[in-house]
Length: 424
Image (cartoon, rainbow, N blue to C red; front, side, top):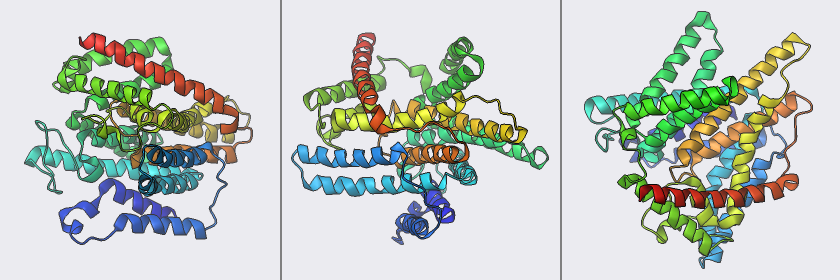
């Protein structure tokens, strides 16, 4: 299965099927690769029980998304939304099932990082020649882009952001007389340069958030806060769009207005929202915030489910990092240290993704469900390899997630109010 899954992942990220030479052939390469991976999983012997809460929550979220269309008067839209979400469901299933094995976790991280390097090289060619081998030019005064789902520089930056901690993790593993470390450090440096070429303010803030969380966990909150403030000041001095970071700036103000519109949609339709995909039917701009988008389009029910799904995937690596490190057997100690390194890598990747997603409408993108599948599968494998690991239960936690969802919705409303005052 893993061979077909990696092939599919390469097609999702590098997207050769959308190059001009292949696009005209009309071959459905992505569905073929996904169905091959699904068939291999169904016929193979690597099936794991579907006990992690992420499975149930994503399935429930799809149902709520369908009901949101019915509630807003379009019964046929429920079927359309089901087929739109179906790739995300299959992606989560396959990636989670594969990642119970540590070697498959590494393979998927390799693929993500190396594909991101290919896209960075494409971006460097764009800057040098005006366009890359895909035929895509730079946009907005030199910002790089790619084809398909990465045609927005912000989406391209998001891929680089989650790939950087993966490359650094693999570089820290050493081996091959230090050449492996040198190679992966070079990959991480190239990806950092790719982030710079996208000139994405959200990605710059995500880099700061990732570094801050790493420092917090390693050196404490005071060190993280102090160095974070210095880092933000340094970023503001770079010749990038970070110099325009101001609530009153036209682009930023437009985002705040979109957040406000989303909150108003939720207030008017608090249970099931305005329907998945219907945000722009009620206002000119998209939400520019993944949390606001889900809240507005699926109401408090869908938002609670989606937030719990994401929240569990933050909790999984945090649980491992909080477990006691001391063990009597040196071999077990080394293995547990490796698990903790993976936990740190995945947590930092999650922080980076959602720091970007806070300023983008990326609640339903396939990259999110690849990342959630990677985290969920790895934690399932940790539970298999180490007895006594906590079991996560939606039945036990549903009230807590309901309270968190309600409080975060109020928090979003307060953030919008404050930003409006600052912009005024």
